[in-house]
Amino acid sequence: MRNQSTMYDEADSVRVPLMTKKDVAQYFQCSMRQVELMANKGRLPKPFYLGDSSPRWRKQDIESLIERLSQDAQAKCGVEVAEQS
Image (cartoon, rainbow, N blue to C red; front, side, top):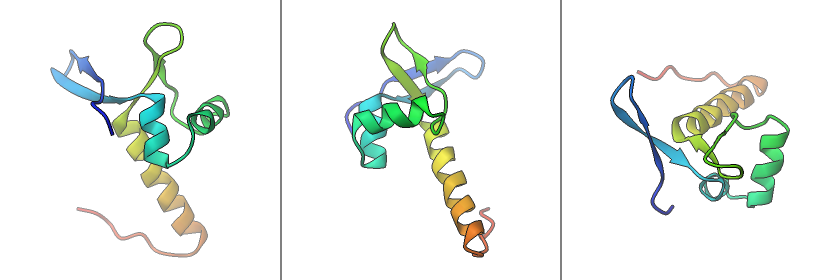
């Protein structure tokens, strides 16, 4: 992925990695249009916007979504998910 944007979280004094629509598409290995459709249907975390048409997602939110979807899929198949420490 290209250089990612970052958001500065003043409460924690930490830079928060951000993902553009293109970054999310690359992460999911899909088109940017598919990212738009998933966002519009509520299948992605709600983005925030820089300007009128520049959505950004926190990388942590996208990674958490992947983890949750993985756990849900494993639970539906009857596979136990090992606790991570």
